Image (tube, rainbow, N blue to C red; front, side, top):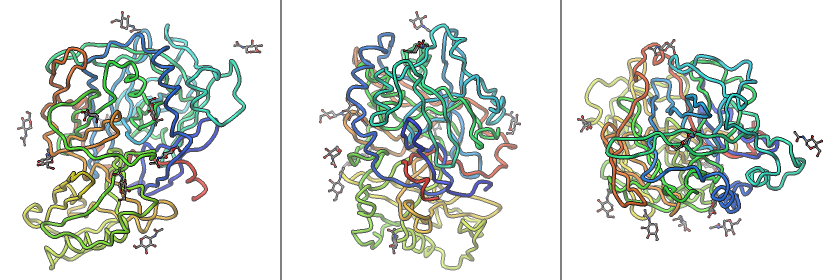
Length: 483
Ligand SMILES: *[C@@H]1O[C@H](CO)[C@@H](O)[C@H](O)[C@H]1NC(C)=O
Ligand SMILES: *[C@@H]1O[C@H](CO)[C@@H](O)[C@H](O)[C@H]1NC(C)=O
Ligand SMILES: *[C@@H]1O[C@H](CO)[C@@H](O)[C@H](O)[C@H]1NC(C)=O
Ligand SMILES: *[C@@H]1O[C@H](CO)[C@@H](O)[C@H](O)[C@H]1NC(C)=O
Ligand SMILES: *[C@@H]1O[C@H](CO)[C@@H](O)[C@H](O)[C@H]1NC(C)=O
Ligand SMILES: *[C@@H]1O[C@H](CO)[C@@H](O)[C@H](O)[C@H]1NC(C)=O
Ligand SMILES: *[C@@H]1O[C@H](CO)[C@@H](O)[C@H](O)[C@H]1NC(C)=O
Ligand SMILES: *[C@@H]1O[C@H](CO)[C@@H](O)[C@H](O)[C@H]1NC(C)=O
Ligand SMILES: *[C@@H]1O[C@H](CO)[C@@H](O)[C@H](O)[C@H]1NC(C)=O
Ligand SMILES: *[C@@H]1O[C@H](CO)[C@@H](O)[C@H](O)[C@H]1NC(C)=O
């Protein structure tokens, strides 16, 4: 619990206004950022025309992931991706809460050379790559990103600044180069493929990124905006703009794939339109077989932004009016517990019996009758010899974060979560994240299995000792003024 909470400052407007938060130690905030809404059209038209001729996608992309979301370890998930010619490997954090990909660049003097669990870090140099080139201000991508702001002309480089929820940030300029990835080519088989992608070249470290225990080469944003790598890849038309993850809360790693998932079958619910994150309508909550009595308005708070689904946040945050009755109801199953507050934040108790027998599952209801069932072993976690409640009260957060509903890995682990950006829907189902899923090849109609990975040893005891909540999550701009 080194990093406690919420420096929820994101999105600093320099030239590029963004809202994303890679790691957030505590609540979140959400509002529509209209700057990004509508960024799509000309961007994707441009990409289709210009930069994706080299793609060889069909069934999809298999992103090998490593890391863990467990609150009692360093919680982050990352993947390995090749960039440049010749290609070099980079480890980037996967973040459904932000919208661009970036890696640290050669001019970053203070960036660590060794990162999370001893990973060897690499700094990208566009000049070392035969195919690397700068993105100029008058390129369509940059014009779209900078829509509404002025001062960027002709042959200047296209700058960006991205500030995350934990106060870390990346600042630099956009470059375009070939990215190598694993294209699904058969059952549990991949072939290396490449595509030209525009991404950020980070020119300086943030205070946070220069500490090495959780440092990586960069971030791979899987947010909704069209500037994300998946949107760039998908606009080739050869892969669906859909992706899925199954984060293994038990063994670490899991499945992360881009493409049309046909197995398992997943019930979907509509994303709330015009939100910068993956927001859905929550309609009711059951504890065991009892439905919590919650005033209807509570689900309608925050201008109907709904509940945010964010695999990048470790825990789950609920408004006061949900948190209080929920935790009371759960704890009423064991009236004799002696509660204590640990590190000011966590409600904990001594309990040595089977938690799944002693506590009720919690079921969230969403639009289109989609259910999300969370088991006691998901929402209770062991810490310092006690069991602690993972639910967090967002009513105690300040400013715009107050009373947000943010559902992170606590509820999403061990589920296959499917994001369909074409139909603007999201869904999930309980799933074994050590097994495999099936993707459909859009061209041939054939289907292929994609299996689980865990690209680093999942249990580095030394790393696990650090009790750090690392959240990936997306936020929006404007928060800085709140701090
Ligand atoms: C992305 O592009 C598509 C197609 O041009 C568009 O429909 C969609 O609204 C865009 N999304 C965003 C977030 O701008
Ligand atoms: C385990 O983590 C520690 C600290 O994060 C690191 O120094 C060490 O190299 C890691 N060991 C392995 C085997 O990954
Ligand atoms: C950028 O444009 C200016 C004026 O148009 C020109 O003098 C300069 O050489 C250009 N720089 C590059 C790198 O093209
Ligand atoms: C991209 O893939 C093509 C076809 O497999 C290959 O010929 C080319 O060398 C690759 N380019 C890069 C930069 O890796
Ligand atoms: C999907 O929803 C239907 C009814 O709404 C239900 O019968 C079915 O079990 C659900 N499937 C999954 C995988 O949740
Ligand atoms: C969410 O709920 C509100 C209020 O019931 C409704 O107006 C809106 O259409 C719903 N949105 C979605 C995406 O279901
Ligand atoms: C979303 O935003 C666009 C543009 O700001 C607006 O035209 C549209 O009505 C909005 N849709 C909803 C459901 O609020
Ligand atoms: C948060 O929820 C509490 C309890 O329902 C309520 O009293 C308070 O006004 C809410 N605050 C905001 C900012 O919505
Ligand atoms: C997306 O929506 C279209 C039209 O409603 C539907 O035909 C298609 O099956 C949907 N795709 C998925 C993957 O649900
Ligand atoms: C999950 O799948 C893996 C690989 O297929 C299998 O070895 C394991 O037994 C499964 N776990 C459960 C709980 O079914």
